[in-house]
Structure formats: structure tokens, C-alpha cells
Length: 76
Image (cartoon, rainbow, N blue to C red; front, side, top):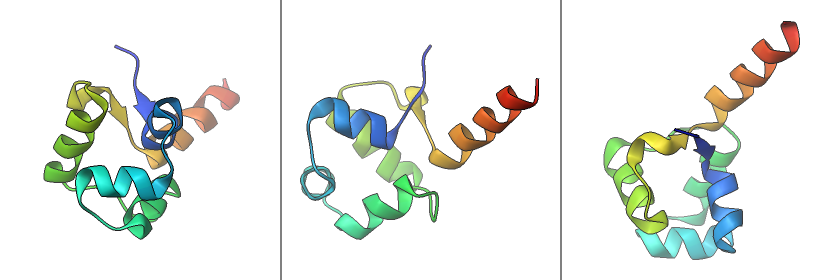
């Protein structure tokens, strides 16, 4: 299963950070923090994201994990 970051999912849906925040009932700042790896969503928030994007929860990757995988790929 391909995992995609919140930023990738949001952009593919054509939503701004504000629009995504409104869809799941949180602040735009939370979305910004998730997309810049300053914070990660709670399990409840991941569930809301999955519902908003109509995807399984397991297909959501976090920015911190994606950055780490990118570094590991470059080292090989």
C-alpha cells in the first residue's frame, strides 16, 4: 500500500490548509504543524483525516517519517 503525506493528500484533493482544517474541525495551524513535522496528529485526528480523504488510516504517512525515508534512500 502506498503511503502519502498529509500535504500530498491535501494538495491532491485541491484543498488549502484552511479548507482541510474546516473539514476535520481543527485549526489551520495544526495542519501547518503536521505538514512541517512540528507535531503529529492524534489517533482521532488521523481517523478524521482518513475519513476526509476516503482512504484507510494506514495509508497516511507523517512528514517526519517521509523525511527519514528520503534520507535513508539517499544513503544507499
